[in-house]
Length: 450
Image (cartoon, rainbow, N blue to C red; front, side):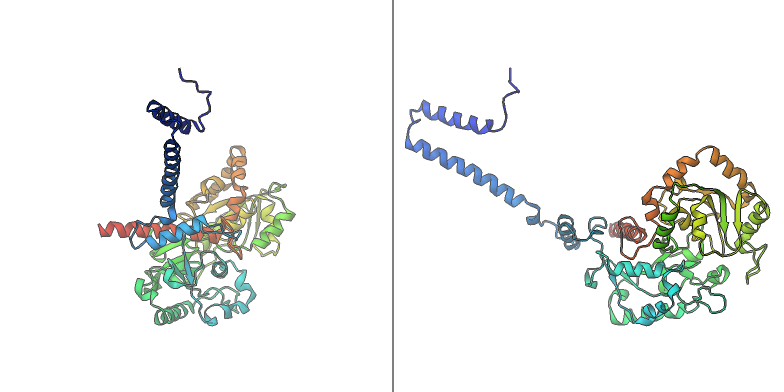
């Protein structure tokens, strides 16, 4: 019977020595100087063989991949095995992805920052993403090693002096001008026909670059942008001319600092004395230039039905400290406006108020990562008349579960743009989505080659 209590370390060497001793003893050579010489040589030969085997097997010396992607794989290997000094290191998270940021003349971006609202408006993700990429680990100063090219053109920073709203009519001249500039001075746009170039369209109807839907649809997507990647707040699940382009749906911009300040005064798990909250434009049947009802009359129906209901806190006028109202509310209504999306989506999540999404067919930002089904409610536009009973039912059943999911810090982080990329934040999610698009492009290329 084998004794398993005998230490295994060193047993193999012991058996080799005994075998050699016994073999030589049978031949009467145990005490021969030749025997000791042979034993020492044999021992050193074994150690040399093992050391050499380990040396040639070490990964940095293996280079059997001579495919066009071998340099990328080598770069990935170095980045994955070398620790980064940055606290927001993304080399491990983004699989070696590299983005080249064009250094455009100031008229395309910096000049617009004269207006302070440019960096804080709900459309300001175009500024925030640009700033974060400039300080990011994924940025490369060598365009020849870039996977993507970011074109920093600010089109939502031109505010109307009449009503204060963003005026983006200049976008259809500013963007072609930027494309002409980079295609004339760099070979990369013409090489890929712009398919690896990234633009931000952070206003109502995204790649159509107009704030009114009927005009946006009529104008369509600019011809020279149809092959590029658009980061846009606009997204719907049904066929729409303004999203018929490679795109990533991103959240509207909400200042992380304002959220942090509000959260200090109104903790996530504090008293929520407002049952259902909405503050914003709720005029009865306001008409836009196309003659259609604003918000498809959804806000009108909410106002008429619940304005006198004590459980509904509905306000039609602006209030600078309205985030404190969100932090005090259990449910925050997020009805569509001109477009399906709303900044209230982000504000509600960031401040722990359950968003009640009333926008049929909306495609939500980062829906493959953010657990929208577990942190929000979706009410059909035609069911706003039942809103009170729906919210009461949720309160009696699974409200605590929804709030527990909603109050996860990672959920809040994923919808906020920081000045410097933080793991899991909105810009981090954008880059993660680009990694996915790069993988998809490689798979499509392999299929076409076959």
